[in-house]
Image (tube, rainbow, N blue to C red; front, side, top):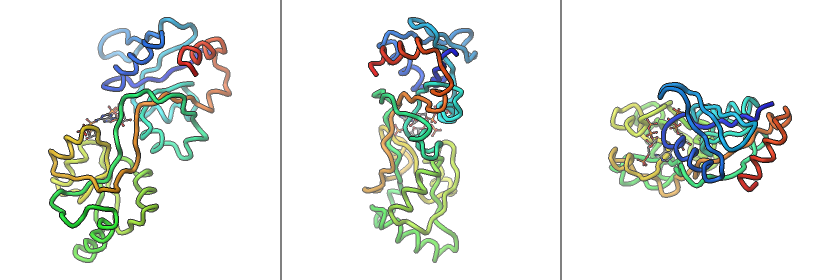
Amino acid sequence: MTLKLGVPSKGRLMDKTFDWFDRHGIRLTRTGSDREYAGSVEGIAGVALVLLSAGEIPRELAAGRIHFGVTGTDLVHEKLPRWEQQVEEIAPLGFGQADLIIAVPRAWVDVDTLDDLDAAAAAFRAEHGFRLRIATKYHRLVREFLTDTGVADYQLVDSQGATEGTVKNETAEAIADITSTGETLRANHLKILSDGLVLRSQATLWRSRVAACEGPDQAALAELLRRIDH
Ligand SMILES: Nc1ncnc2c1ncn2[C@@H]1O[C@H](COP(=O)(O)OP(=O)(O)OP(=O)(O)O)[C@@H](O)[C@H]1O
Ligand SMILES: O=P(O)(O)OC[C@H]1O[C@H](OP(=O)(O)OP(=O)(O)O)[C@H](O)[C@@H]1O
């Protein structure tokens, strides 16, 4: 069976992933029109490129529909329960670094730590009759983190994008999202809690443990692992 390599189909991760494989003697290219999600692999036989949304690559790996895939640590940890059983981390790629953090309005001068947030959440509930809302798309990771750190009186509200805007829009009081330069947080008058780092993420090459059993082309597999020094 052709060895299938899943790569983000657009944006910052796609270009840097192509560069990374190029440095390892494997040339990935998009083919067809700008809009067509088709690609080719040169420099190694028996490998096919599958262009996918970064957010869907964890699921495709877990289902065994791709043998290898590139996506962020954050997306694998969020989307795959017990991810270690489903995928193997082959190599961090050194780009796409982002921190998943908890942030609150800068104007909350008394709230700098998770303990402060816990106290603020209890006070918020007493005053407003509903739980303080934290907007995020990282439901599993944030819930686990807040449980482990003892923050209780909150609710998660789903935000699939522009999460930092939810506080200004009054659909949430706090957020949990990834940050890289910190500019989006600053522009939206938010500050990171001093102990509010949930996860450090970067783009990573993963191997499906499920697809490994389903017989990819062994020569292609050996050659790919040799090229990436694994
Ligand atoms: N500002 C950023 N700097 C560096 N990495 C980032 C940044 N924002 C997101 N990332 C990383 O890029 C990866 C893809 O993020 P995201 O889910 O936002 O993808 P997307 O570009 O919206 O793609 P899609 O909608 O197709 O899934 C994630 O692993 C994330 O950690
Ligand atoms: O710390 P910074 O360098 O400012 O980057 C952080 C921003 O980048 C990502 O958003 P993206 O551009 O993917 O848009 P989205 O929020 O609509 O997903 C992330 O969700 C933050 O909003």
